[in-house]
Amino acid sequence: MKNLSEKLIYYLITFVIFFLLFKIVAWLENAYIPLNTQTQLVSGIIILPTIVILSFVLSSLLFKSLKESNGK
Image (tube, rainbow, N blue to C red; front, side, top):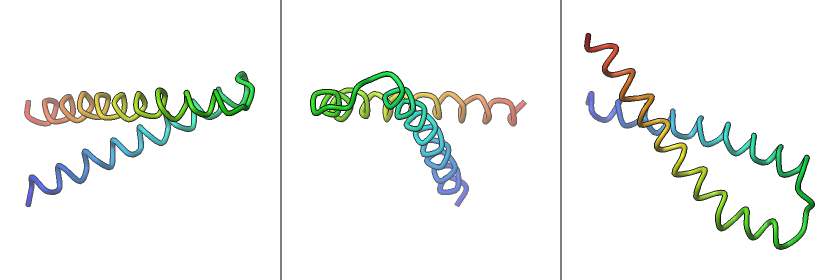
């Protein structure tokens, strides 16, 4: 049961980080990049998977540091 709750917390943290990064990138795109088909394609193919990978890496580092701080 503890393992299931840890995974749930991990994925929740990942989702929150992804949502924040997505909002920041969307704001930057709307503010500084013109809206056309090519930029939307680049955003869908390159930027979104990068945000997903970055959110998993950041949540993994955060979760690891939280587990280490509670273990000491």
